[in-house]
Length: 294
Image (cartoon, rainbow, N blue to C red):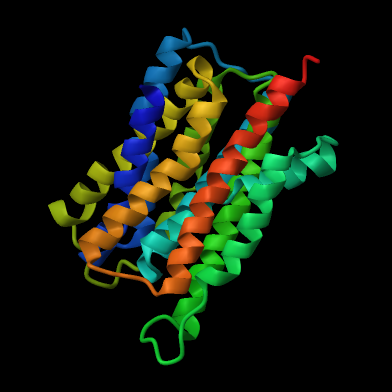
């Protein structure tokens, strides 16, 4: 149930994440709204944990790294969806486990399974195809077409690194404190977001601006917390594919339906390969976990 909530909430959030910016609400202020919506789930989580704060140096370091890479990726994501198509950005971000696996192999000396290796291979094939555009296709080329793709790659890198540090933190930190540090890091970057905001331009302060942003971002925040509990009470073999592949798939489908957009055939192949790769990469940690005791 927790995994399904995450998948549904993140899928819908991703599809509508760009809408507040369309109505004149800057992406930097969308970030501020998201950071604020993280507070209620964090308070609920800490209440369930008996308000036990892990403030030792190791927890502070890992929590800060997890929080800053996650929040930094979110800040860039809100700008990415304002400059590029969400139905392409989210399938690319779904491939972030490639980075996590690479770091685990490099620093933890872990070995990738055949399933994981196939997922990595499919991801490497899919990524270049996302930026392909047939000659003469409007709006798919030029600086803007390159910009959103670069943003998506940076977010992929940031969230892949974040997942690696989460992996390290799971051995010494509880899920509630990890989420708390993610919230604190998000709030820490709020002044940066405000500083980056151009308040000299007209800003929509009505329901179509901060109101719509709050509705979509609470789905993002609550989905993050339910994912934490999904991994605690469920099996990674079931939870990870739903979150990594299922949510971006919902985002892509809903986004294309709402926008009435149909990508070219090469891009459709890229999306399909990305979803398959994300599912295989999500299964990879579970296989290692099963093999470890023997």
